[in-house]
Length: 376
Image (cartoon, rainbow, N blue to C red; front, side, top):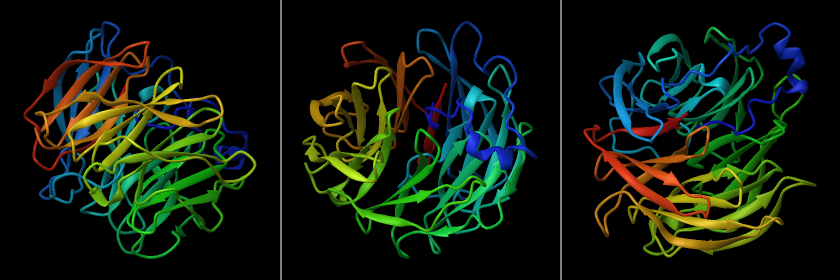
């Protein structure tokens, strides 16, 4: 479910854009038969990027479902320093994939059985696209190289991207090494984390879908990376602290009434943090620790303050190993999947009502360069 959690809700402010191109979702979700779903990652291979597909059974098991060329290329380097390089749209009808080697974005139509058909591939208007945000018919791509910027597109129901003129915006500075772009729950703000500057940029989105210039804010800790929104506009940001052993952490912020820090840095005792995702009831948030090969969990109070719940809520590799990165919940929040770039596996967990995770299985055979994750 790697997408904005609230993209299912229409965005009235985009009426001017949607007049010519509306994002229609056909009845029913694209999902595997038998009450299951779909899981996608990408190879990120320099010789040719491809999507690696799985179908998910109702019990959380995964079955390989083909490999699909994006038409672009990856970096050919193990892992990407980003969250959101593979993204499903609302209804799971389209899949968007960043090609950071060829500086473009591919779009696939998703069939009911999870098979993919390439529908479009468009330049990203920058260097090394690694994160994609989708809100209705509006798409923004984060270019992490030089120049580093965000660029906007409209997306129709057939899977065609059209560049939104006048939508390219620079980040707070060059060399910011950004990690993720995402829409706020109300769709009126774009948020970008910058690892090198330890800033969090916000961009107000006007009724035509175009953003303001970047408004940079100081993050609480060093190296803000991935983040996840709660439905009320609170968001939890992971802090990598440049991979220092035992320094991984998270902090929380709100956009209500302007940008404001709610909880400063709260450590998880692990190393080199990456992605973040909320539970169904939004009382827990889970973050991955690449340097430790683990998943940590935090409780999230009504006021948005966070506290460490389990330093090790899940393990994706060998004890003391490394590699846990991309993480995503299924649409029903019953299962969590996380990739491990050390063991080259996709790991399946059951999400329990008490906030704990139960490891189910690990699925191997992935290429050493693979990255990104989206589940339904």
